[in-house]
Length: 355
Ligand SMILES: NC(=O)c1ccc[n+]([C@@H]2O[C@H](COP(=O)([O-])OP(=O)(O)OC[C@H]3O[C@@H](n4cnc5c(N)ncnc54)[C@H](O)[C@@H]3O)[C@@H](O)[C@H]2O)c1
Image 1 (cartoon, rainbow, N blue to C red):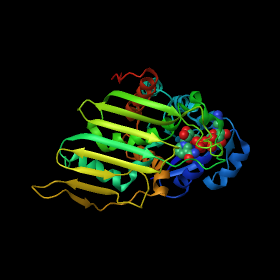
Image 2: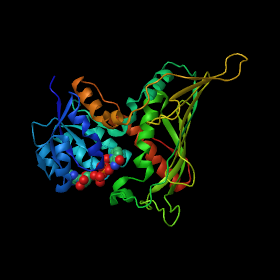
Image 3: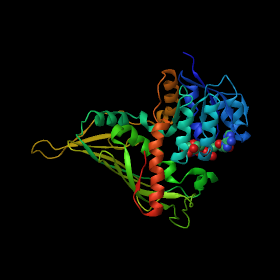
Image 4: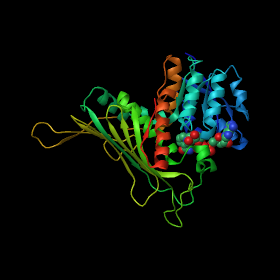
C-alpha cells in the first residue's frame, strides 16, 4: 500500500519531535514543508527528508500529490488551516489544542460532514497508545472495576527552569486559548475520553483557575498572562464524578496521579511516561481480607511512540477507512469542558454543557 503523503505546516519545536513519524514506518511520508520562517524551515527540512519548502501553506493545499497535512502551528491558526485543508480535499492531523472553542469544533464538524471521506484527528491522542491507557480502557469497558463512580486526575509538574523562553503566542489567551488548560488539558481530557468511553459524558463543570505567578524573583514562569493552575469538578450523565486538577508551577513536588474507583475495584495509573512507579495498580477488598493491591503487567508509555502516534493513527485510519481516535466528535466533548471550565472559573458558577 502506498504511504500517505503529508505536507507539514510549521517547523517549530513539535515538528522536530514528530519528524520520525515521516521517516520511520511505511504509512506516512512528508513531501513538502510550509513555514513562514525560512531559517526554521531549512533546519527541519533535512530531518523530515523534504526538499520542497514554501512560505504559503495554501501552495501545499493546492498540490494534488499531497494527501494530508500536519498542522504544527500556534493554536489560533488551527481553525482556519483545518477548514482550508478540508475545502482543498486534504486529511488533517492538527496539533493540540484542536481549536480555541467548542464553537470552532462545530464549524469543523459541519464542514467535514460535507466531505466525510476526509479524516481529521488531533494530536492530543498522543498518550492513547500507551499500554497503560489501552489496558485501563479495556478494564473499564469490561466492567472489571464494577460501576465507576469517581475519577481523581491530578497532575502537578515542576516549575520551569529560570530563564526558560517560550514563543509569545503561549502568553496570549487569544492565540493559545489559555495556559496550562490548553497546553496539557487536551491530553488529560482525551485520555479520559478514551479510557472512560461511554461513561465520559460530561454534563456539569464547576472549576477554578489561576494564572502563573513568580515563584521567586529569580524563578518567574514565562507566561504570566495565562492560567498555570486549575481545579474542576466534572459531573457526567452517568453520575460519575471527576476531580480534574493541573498545577504547573508551584512550591511543591511533581505529582502524577490518576485514580479510578468503582464498586468492585480501584485502579491507580498515570498517562505519560513515568517509569519510576507501577503503571497499573489494582485495588480490591475480597471478603474479609485486607485491601489487596496487585501490580498488573503493562507496557509502560514510551516518549518516542507517544510523540509520533497522532500521525501514525491518522495514516492508519485513512488506509483502513475508519475514523481516527481524537476525532472532531471527541474534541466537541473536550472543548465543551474547556469552555465550561473557563466560564465557571470566571462566574464562580457551575456550568451545564449543552449537547
Ligand atoms: N512545544 C511543544 O512541546 C509542543 C508539544 C505538543 C504540541 N505542541 C503544539 O504544537 C503547535 C506548535 O507548537 P510549537 O511549540 O511547535 O510552536 P513554535 O512556535 O515552536 O512553532 C510554530 C511554527 O509555526 C510557524 N508558523 C506560524 N505561522 C505560520 C504560517 N502561517 N504558515 C506556516 N508556518 C507558520 C512559526 O514560524 C513557527 O516556526 C501548538 O499547537 C502547540 O500547542 C507543542
